[in-house]
Length: 229
Image (cartoon, rainbow, N blue to C red; front, side, top):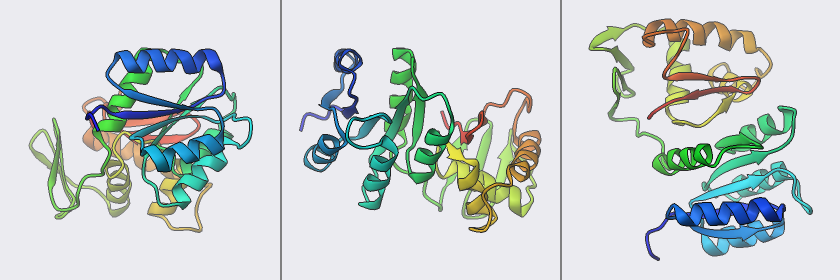
């Protein structure tokens, strides 16, 4: 063990796999490669990476199914999807099953490195007993209190549950379906308009500029993320 973060790249395109290895190695990461889902699972349990960079289009196993198998095993390794697929369906499904983030191909290496830094910085969710300070925003999970620039902000019970769900998974994309089921219950999943209304109200209460939010970010067609850095 040398203390360098471990990144497992699961990618069947040789040129991109080579580029990822060179770039990540230069920036202080240990890199192991897998071409298939079978190889990825073997490397996961043998090498214990900190983050998996996962292409959805693998030759032997769909990447979405690989996410399902990893999470079903109880493994909590961060998973960042690398997707060239044009539609949102597969990405949304992968996120619902437990992936943490996604990048759409082609992507810049600078963006990838930024997403990796975030994933590594937030390997564990905040505890529920402390006040969490995000600059102008402070959130106390224990006492269900929110302060913005030193002033107490009153949230409705639903607004609180949405904010708590997002803050508990910092910088991770939570899909509409995931948020609806966490906040309203398992019978919900398609009522996206509920979220749009409540998130808009939350932004008015906690954002300096609700039209250009800093904390509550929209992932178009997918869901929301709480920006914690």
